[in-house]
Length: 397
Ligand SMILES: [Fe+2]
Image (tube, rainbow, N blue to C red; front, side, top):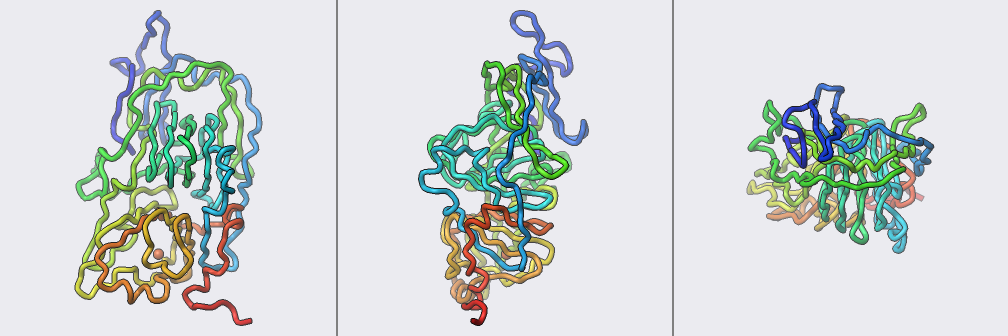
């Protein structure tokens, strides 16, 4: 989903001659979803966009996963994953370490300061949340300025690269589908409705073409293989950033979590009230600083809940998370509360929250409908005692 934009030079009529200043032709490319039956954009290239001169294997970092078995809630400390000096030699694309994954979505984390290679994900859309720092994301549609708290939506098969301004921390949600706002936020023609927690003004797309000249330019492509996710290095005859103009409803954009307007109530509002986006088999929700429940007898922290159909993943990115006090969870933590097992506030938090008027918390939640498995990054930074924190003790010795 996105609304119509037009950038740079496009001909007045689609699929007609668009001439360069010296009389040649620009090459029109339709980038469209679901065949030719959903959102699309038309891009006008200086060079033939399919012209490649080489294709070799790109060995991806470890993509293996381990089931959450024996089943238990888990706490991961993402800030322990990268050594203090690692960012200087790491980029946002090739440095990602896989945290969680299933057949619908993969979540990775990276601390990086290097410019990334050119890259595109041909498996699905990416939603990358910038936990800290700032960067430019250069794309075939133009550049995006990215700051702390931004979600960056990169549509499937968009060639791009990340250029950080110093160190950034990025949380990459890679779908096997498209990532869109929930249908209930949209009019029948796709406009964000008055009751949606954000609107089109909060989505920031490219504003100008990004023209780069070059020959024999390498692009890393993530795509599907018979054994799962694989990578290929494609070498293009000319630099892919050769688009003089484009128009349409398919393009990358940023959305800052501080522009998400929370929906509150007299009693506790469930996670769907915090939803921002969804893909096939998962949702993305924002827990932002907000006034909390104002019924005179309300209990502001969540009730215990057994989300029987989903795994619930919270990434704590700011503030103070009231319901998790005493569990060891802090900024940079992930909690995994799997389907089939109840969870809720830590001991004492339920009673302590009575009378609270405001929660200063910031978290990004991903709920999946298939179980999530643990990537090598999760196994490397787990706090193995978290599961026992509600009881106050682990197994009897
Ligand atoms: Fe929950």
